[in-house]
Image 1 (cartoon, rainbow, N blue to C red):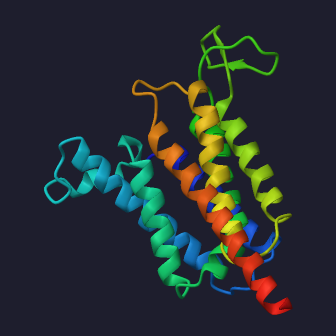
Image 2: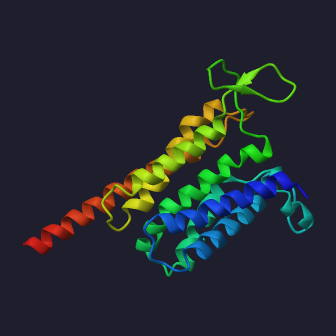
Length: 224
């Protein structure tokens, strides 16, 4: 078993647990639902990654557990959101209140890179860059950037109007935008799922605009 990966997963779970208790969330089952959605997303994303790599999940069931072998980000995110929506009673308002906690859990996963020894990205000579053991090349701690950035986004979301759809849309917009902004600093061969990050930004922006517009119309109808 890869204990470093286990510690990173436990760090993410701890972030979820802490987020549910720090941020305003009235659902007593929020942590359980978020955890279930995360596990479902990882499993689904792993299956999609295996299929795209030419591996049959049914013929290679043990490979499903090798998360380090790759997880399809778009599939994992989509499945996690869908599962959380279903287990939360199909209420957008419940998704809204859970959005900051979900971001804190995601931030904790990124910060779990300290356990996995996988924080560094492209070479850099900025003062806060550091090098891997046995190497003289200093690199951007890109996963630390992502983790801290997600914590900030989670805090900023709670400053937005608490109208149906706003917080969850803002969470998707912020997380996608941050990943897109930090992707050039990561060590990747393919360049990363930039297209899907752009789609996330678009959906989040449209969701926020639509939610605010509908809320304004509702306010006007009440006044009139």
